[in-house]
Image: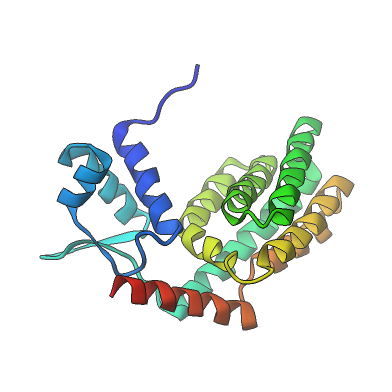
Length: 223
């Protein structure tokens, strides 16, 4: 039986999604009255959702100003991506050794779905399938603590990972990198899976400059 998420959790997901797609850009103040009206809810579950978002660092709750979408300085963001790259590298290494046939079949299916989305230039669908692809690799590591930690940081970085896909041709590049990861896991090559995932997640050079430019554009929207 599928259990529906409680109201505050559903709200958290909905607000996080709007932050991820740029509807609520960095620096924007989230007015509780406006949010309650927009989502058709009372203030109690909304406040619970905002507390959850604040605990994960997606928003900040400031005295006299209330909830504000977080802005991360470039150095901090770079550090977070460095940690994410190492976590995913570890997941890839373990997944290549431990993935089951059923898990591999689902990963293959998801990989093919991402191919379709990339070829169609459907960024939103590609992002969702891309996130599932990574989550399946975390799961295939068969290390519950590692999976939990990777998912937590992935959620924290999802707005920035999504922004990267807005850069021209990035979905196609991302798919190509995924293809190398998938083939390594399928072959049981732990070293290659680890290295390909580390390179896929690491944000440096031109990619980081593109990400910063996208963030600047979102910040101007909030101003």
